[in-house]
Length: 325
Image 1 (cartoon, rainbow, N blue to C red):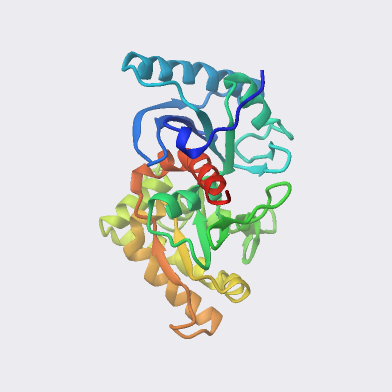
Image 2: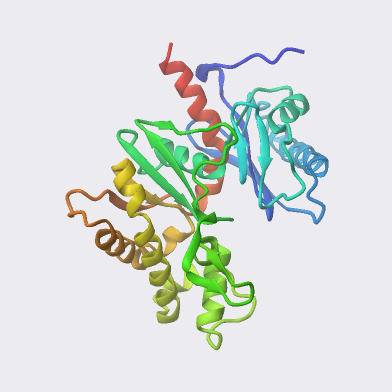
C-alpha cells in the first residue's frame, strides 16, 4: 500500500519517538508541540535492531490504546529523534554508541512498513535544534550552533532555519576529538572530550576529582541538579567542564561566526554556572571582542525537551513543505 505524504493542514496528530540506549519515549502530540499522552519504556538488555523494532511496535500499540480510549484520532505520521549517525539520504542508522550491534539499519523504511505512515527522522542534536527553533528561544536567522551532551557531546548547525546534514550523518560528533592535555595513564592515550563533557564524563570527573563528596552511583544529571542548587563541589565540576568546552569552541566560532550557541537540557539546568565560564573561556581562546562573539544561551524547554525533540522532525519537515509551495 502506498504511503500518502500529508500536508501540514492535514496533520492533526503525530506519533513521536525519542530513542537512545537507556529508554524509548513515545508521545502523542500535534504540530503546536502540545503533548496529550506519553509513555516511557526502559531499554532492554538486547538492543538488536529487530528487538527494538518489536519494542517500538508493542509500545506504540499501548500508547495508541490509551489515545483511542479518549476518542483521539490515529496519528497522521511518525516523527523520530534518535542518537547516533543517521543518514538522511538512505534513511538508515549507520552506527550508534548506544546500539553497537546496529550496522546500517534501514530505520525509516522499517518504521514506514510497520506503521504505514510517513516517517520523519533526525539525529538527536538536530532534532533538539529544530525543537528550539520551533518551540523555544532559538532564532531561525543566521547560523545557530546547538550543543547536546547526552549520550555524547555533539553539535548540530542551522543556517537561516535549515539544518546542516551530511551523508552518513557523522557531522558534529565533536566529543570524539582527543584531548591531548589529558592522557589516560592506564592506556597511555589521550582521552576524548566525551570523557569530560558528556553526562557520563561529568560524573566520571566528579568521582575522580572529588571522590569523598559523591556516591559511586552519582550521575551527570545529579551533578547538574546539585550545581543548580549551588553545591560548590558541583559548581566546580561544571565550571571546569565549561572552560574546557569554551577553549575548544574557538575554531568553530571563527569558522562559522554563529549568531547563537545554544546549550541543551539537562546542562541548561546549570546555566548560571556553565554559561559565564563558557563565554569567558571562548573569549580568551578566540581573541574576539564581546561584539564579535555569538550569544551564549541555554535551552528553556527544560524537561519537555525530549518530548519536543520527538515531534520536531515531522513538524519542521511539514512546515518546510508548506513554505516551499
